[in-house]
Every structure is written in structure tokens, then in C-alpha cells.
Image (cartoon, rainbow, N blue to C red; front, side, top):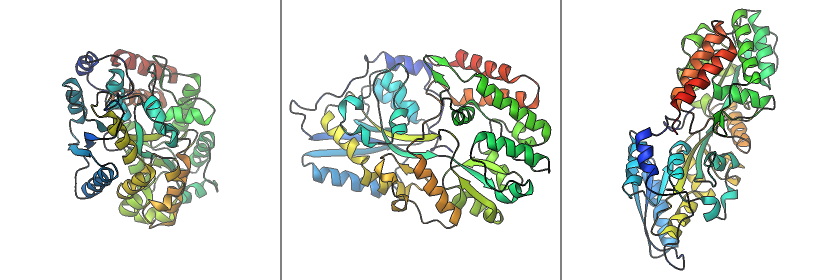
Length: 429
């Protein structure tokens, strides 16, 4: 599951270098006036959200803020989905970065490193109200501070075909990755395949976290996913491949988005991962005959977190107003109203997730209600996988090498080392 195209490639090297030359380190915003009054005009930029569904929402938010703070004007602008990162870089480089803007963590990282974004740990007194994993997504290795308010979030759950599990005598869905792989071996003996995808470094780290390890793929200036624990999981996949537990498509489609979900929808595999609204929005539409067999459970270990956030320019001429508006648009009330429109996503404020019935669509199927509750409950411990240094191209290359290891063409250690080498050769400094 991805939030639009936010888990995209890192910002281009040449543009990043040009941007870095604009200014020094990150800083808290200057006050818009000597007294730091909330007044004056600011610009607020969103990403591909100006449409029939969202436009009335943003217009109302702006009007309500201006009414609460007489003397302020918020100019809302929206950018198309395509080319957004390039547009933001151009704005920053030309000194025209909006005062408040919608940025995923990957894009915010380059701006923060160039000193273009306000450090919200210093500027805001309410950062602790937000989901910890979301705040952490805007905290970067080697850079002090946090540079975005979590706005709307996504995660993943496990989904099981209970009819297929029953064929192998598995009466309860597995609760850990070890139980899952044990069940896969058991099911393979009766001709049932459980695995329709091979793990990538990101998913491997989720599995490793279930065994007590960390979620990191990049830390301390190094790619750190080539570990004995990750190698052992790949080896288990290789053994399961020989036993017939893995679909042929898992190897053929390594690196192809949603390949595991598409296979699960066919009713031929016992397990997949997908987003919180998968049952009502996908299974019910594309595989309705499968509905009675689908069971949702919480993700393993440290659940993944997909994040969109709101950042504040460090160069705003009315920084007190910019900060106040960023806090306002991301407060609990406004976030709940937003995710009512953005089906399948969850608020970035802690208390807003306490009652998912306040924002989630009414479930059309019983297991959808279960999935929504599970997703809201795991927001408190979910964390973003990956790193701004770890790009989609790196993920796809690594997954292809892991597929070769699962097939038995190379060793798990060699697959992960080749992936690390590729990452090191292609990292944006």
C-alpha cells in the first residue's frame, strides 16, 4: 500500500546539490513580527488534492482559521501529482517555498538538510500530541530536529484465507512470522501455497522486528539490512520454495506492485498483506466469492507506517502564522474530518485514533470492521520502513536478488550483499 506516489525515488542529485547551496542548517522559524503575532498572509500548498471531494474541505478550513485569527489571510494552492518533487525543489531554490506545505518524509528530508524547513521540535509545543511513528518519519539520520506534522497515515495488516488454512489443519491464523512460515510448510504438504511474494529488505526488517530486531534498512550512514537474521528468513523461503509453498508468480513478479494481493484475490494462496480497507474496497469488488473466507489480523512485529505530513518553511515572513496554521490544519478535529474523505487512512494525532468509528466508513463486511479497528490500534507502534536514502529502485533491485536466492541460484548472504552494494553505489549523498 502506498499513499499516492509518496514512497518514490529520492530527489535528483543535481537539484539536491543546487538546493543545498541555498542556505545553512535547519532552524526554527523566525517570528513574523517582533511580538510573534499571528497575522499577515501565508501560502498553503497541497499535493493533488484540489478536486470536487477535497476543495470544499480546504476552503472551510481556511475560512475557519481566518475567522479565528482576524488579520490573517491563507492563500491555498495545489500542485498536480506529476512532478511535485521537482516543483517543490524549484520553489525552494528560487526562494518561493510556500509557508506551509504538504510533504511526504522523503521529500521533506532534502529540504530539511538544506535548512529550508522549520524544526518543529523547537518551534511547536504540541508535537507530542502526534503519532510517534509519524513524528519519527520526519526525523532524519544525522540531522537534529523533526520537520513535519503527521497528517494522514496508512499501514498494513495480514489477511488470511481461512478455508485454505483449514485444509492443512491450521485452525487459527498465525500471529508471528515464525508461525506463518511453519504453517506454510504444513500447508505445502497438502498442496496449498501460502506465499505469493518474496520479501524485500523493507518487509524482511518487519519480519526481523517480530523476532526482536530493528526496523532499520539504513542507519548511521550505512545500509544495514544484510544481517544473519534476514539471511535466515530468506533461507526459510528458499526451503519453502522447494517444498511447494511459494507460487511461481512470486518469483516471476518480484518487484511488481500488488502482485501478492492479486494472487490472493484468486483464492489460491493462504496469506497476503494489504491496507486497512482491503476487504470492502478490493475483495468485495474484485473477488466477492472470497469474502466469507477472509480473516484480518494485526501485522507482525513493528507494523509499517506510510506517512503524509505538513511542514513549515524556515524562511516564512509570517512564521508565527505559518506555524499556527500548520498546527490547526493537523489538529484532531480537522484530521478526523479529512480522513472521513480519505477512505482507508488514519489521523496523525494520537487521540483521533482512539475511536475509528468517528472517521472510518461504515463497514460493509464484518471483517472490514475488524480490520479498521486493528489498524487504528497499531498506529501507536507503527513506524515508517525504509529511509529517504533507500529508494524504490534500490528496493526493486534488492527484491530481484532475493528472488534469485529463494530460487537457489545464489545464497541469501550474496543476495543481500549485492543489494547493499547497489544501494551504496546509487545513494544520493
